[in-house]
Image 1 (cartoon, rainbow, N blue to C red):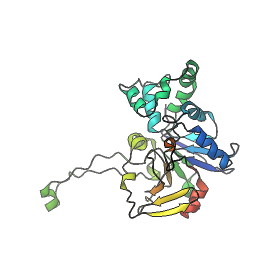
Image 2 (cartoon, rainbow, N blue to C red):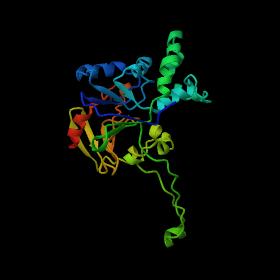
Image 3 (tube, rainbow, N blue to C red):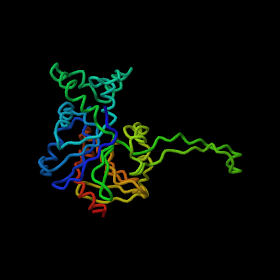
Image 4 (cartoon, one colour):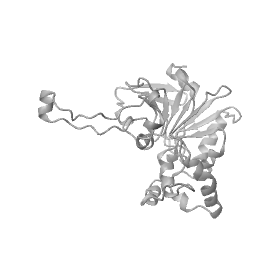
Length: 285
């Protein structure tokens, strides 16, 4: 069973790295780990999820969950995988249409598993996937930061447009609360249980970004687009992926780090960010 919110202490011995959506691209991760001299004895890797599908090494990427230095959150591709291959003992049964959905999103590797790999998936890997948290928080207080897959947005009811008469008179109460960005003190299990859909699948926040009014900061890891609404009051820096972008983007305290690794072209790549360096870029260190 998944833990909604996992808290881990600050890393006082080494570095914390955040990686974008891996999507089976283990070779790209290994190249970055070598380039940045990742030390598994003291460093940690924090993943925004979507470990498998689309790339050539889905099983190998999922095996990273066995490593004590690797921490991941649950993304929509983990969700699709569990819909097709529920973990042993799970009360969840395979969803109608789950196979077709997974295959449309790069999951053909599942049907190509060998007998031994299928046993490994069911006995070892799937229970770990099912246990992935939706949010990871590192550290405490003013130094903490979060990892999620898509966005930390509450699932309020859809906004209803007031009638002409209500707009004219200011009467009526049919304008309901819309979704809003969560804050640190809202990240409890009760609220997170209602937020799993936007956490894994949401794209509302990134669609708010206006590139024309944003500024670009050049960094050693490429350009970082910073929106006019770079920070949301009450929410610590939150690393997310889900939406492949041509550059890192900061909006509403969400740091978007998915560069579409599986695309493997001149405009894509796998980001592996040193959190302390990111704080330095942003003047937060």
